[in-house]
Length: 367
Length: 169
Image 1: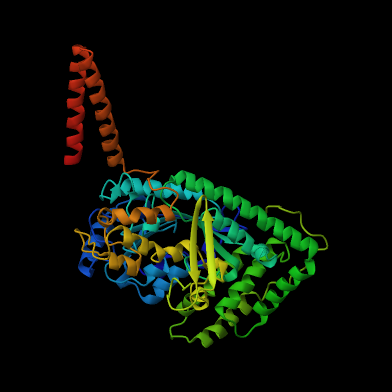
Image 2: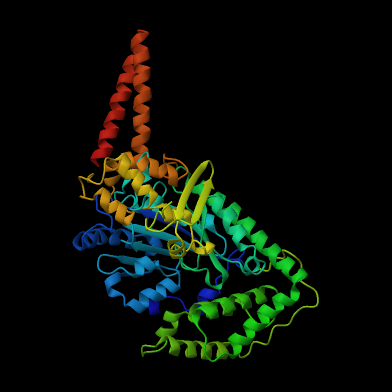
């Protein structure tokens, strides 16, 4: 089975619902674990990496949570497939660059994804739609407790779980949420928020994690420190910060509509105009404009448009998803034409945004 | 002041981050600042930058230069400086001296709090129990309470057997 036959369609994926999914697109908890004594993947020779992969993979595959799964070594996956997994946020860019001696195990629901021999021997993650950090932590904690019975982890009572990079030492946990914050960006408050969040020892990153741009007004917020604070405290702290950010985003949207409705309608109307009529459009422009349309849906400007369609377009207009539909290798220019064709077709039946006479109530939650 | 990344050009961007009671500083030239994405707040985090930068120098001073080598995997101080990653779990022992200040600047604490593998937890519990039993035994002997002392001795023996049984399995 190829990864394409296994993965749910982007349309189905976009229909997953979770609490606060207007603003919180997804939640993720990742644990880093290593095998005692074995060289970390970045330092191990190929033969040793293959040995650790062969030792780890059966232990993961034996988990009941991964009974229905896709399991493959990275050298058996074509580059395009790996990039599609990155665009779906299932593996990291770093993992997509791996080959022999690295592997991937993903469950049918796409709620558990284990990367073997990424930066650490094991990077296991639980994913949930919307704001569900606690559920994600509990899910991955259970899996981790099962694996520790089969593999001997590198652990030290003082330093906790030992990781390749000292930044992950201790709990080896990264708790993160992907947030859509167009209101704070339009209101020019986003930098203040980022600075405040940084001061709390949390990191704010772009769409694809470390060192990437915040395309489409999507930001990832995660813990940075892993030593000296328990997993549940980290989850709790992040939850508090996230609910604050959600509130600020809702307030920013409310204030914008109240004080500068024309600016907001102008942005959204132009975004619709370009997306529904362009004949050539880049991936970056598409994402930034889709973000504005998503805001328009949240504000009730597109009564006949489902947010799931916008979220689906967010995924399928990305370069590798687009390439996947065509057998010939596309150039960037060709992709821009095909992307525009796709957008025009999918938005054909969506009528133009209708500004409301009265702004919607502030902070109203439409799940 | 020279840029702490390229060490060639004059530093023009000075960053200070205060988290809790810890202060971290970085000085960069324009080119390095742009390259590290300092102007793009979304993609930038001081901790990412600090890693393998000032941190590894600190480590080098503390652990006696670039010659320190991990006996398990052969990883050296110089390798750490280059990659910002360690070679294996045993490296934490080999480079422990230098790592401490690095960890202090990077994390909330230097002692692990949180999940412990079940087997380790049991060992830890038993070791703690053994210590407290030994204390009770000493006290009983000092007080010439031989009945109590005998009971403690038997329990210590049982706990020790459990402990060796666990490490053998």
